[in-house]
Length: 199
Image (tube, rainbow, N blue to C red; front, side):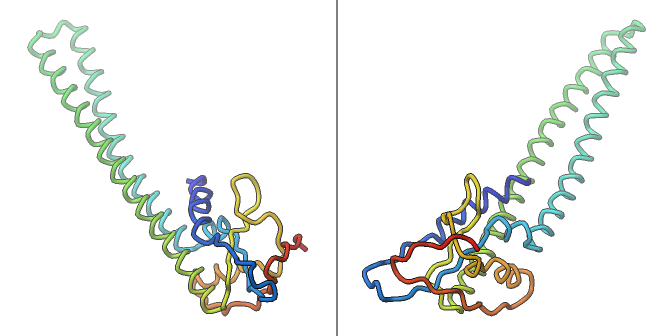
């Protein structure tokens, strides 16, 4: 599940990477950057959802393990009776039951996997929706023109360099995790101005 956070961060980049017109060079733009992966990792609700999902996986695994053990026990019984010279009708009955149990095992395994996949997809959609809404509300209330993903490294965000004063990650997390952070006064950047290196 660790790789999910990186995938989510990448999925959200396009939502907030918007172009700035440079036709009015004198106009100032209020710009913020946010570390999307950090937001997703530290979002309390996301962790709670995944904890609940892991418990569901564990519960379903118990059922699958029980079916597997039942099949192995039946196989052992079959081999023991076969070695002891049991009647063919007895062996056929045991073999039929083993095949039935194995079919049930495969069916349950597929059913549980589909259920878990569906639950996981729902969690991802809910988390992405929450983060998108939080950033939109933050940007709107703070009169931001741009909020970009500043995640560094391969497969990271759209920003290569930025001044630390532009980072609004902590404020977004505060809003998501129960606080109502007011948008800080991020340093404005004039149209067409190059991004500054991190302090």
